[in-house]
Amino acid sequence: MNHIALTALIALVSSGVYAEEKPFYLKASLGNMQFDSEDSTAIREDLHSTGYALTVGYQVNNYIAFEGGIANLGNIHRDYEQSAHGLEWHNEDKILIENYDFRSQQESKYNSYSLGLTLSTQIQQNLNAGVRFGVHQWNENNSGQTEDSGNLSVYSLDRELLYAESYDRSYSWSNEKDSGSNPYYGAEVKWKNGDWGINLEHTIYEIKKEKANLSSVGVTYSF
Image (tube, rainbow, N blue to C red):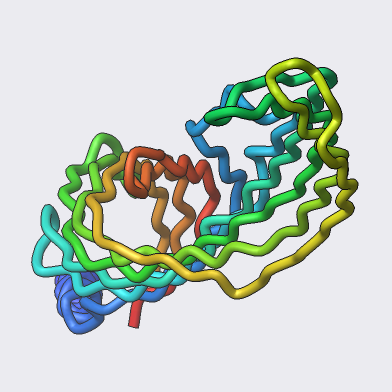
C-alpha cells in the first residue's frame, strides 16, 4: 500500500515539474473579423471577412504570460457612386454647368504584429479565463479602381456658350500602403488538457479611428 502511495506521489510531483518545464506555447486562431468603421458615403460595404492569428507565448506563472504574434485582420470592401446633372457654379466671369457620373471600388487589407500580456485565473479544473492587452503594429494595403465620365459646358454671364468638353477617365491603383501603432485588448476562455488547449477569444485591434473585432477559436500547444 505504501509503495502504491509513494508511486502515486512521485507521479504527481513529476507531472507538476513536467508542466513547469513547458512554459512556452504556440497558438493558432481562426475566426470572423468585423470592422466598426461604417462609411456614410459608400453605397455598399462589406466589413466582414475571415481573420487568423499565430501567437507565441511564455507562461511566467499561473496568472501571467507574455505574448507576441502576427495576425491577418481581414479585408474591407467599399463601393462608391455619385452622379450630378445640371450642376452649375460661377467662376469669375463665366458660368460652368457640368454633368458627371462617378464610380469607385476600393479594398483595404490589414495585418498586424503584436506584443502584450495575458492575465488569467482558473475558474474550474482545466478551465481558465483571462484578458489580453498590448500594442500592435498594423499595416494597411489599399487597392481599387475609379471611373469618372461626364461633360462640362462653359457659358458667358449672358448665357452664350463659349466651349464644351467631354471626359471619360479611369484609373486603378494597388499596393498603396499605410501603417501605425495602436493598442489591442480582449478576453479569452481556455480549456487545457496536458500539452493541448482550446481557446475561445474576442480581441479588438484599434486601427486609427477604426476597430477590427476578431472572434476566434484557437488551438494551443505547450512545449
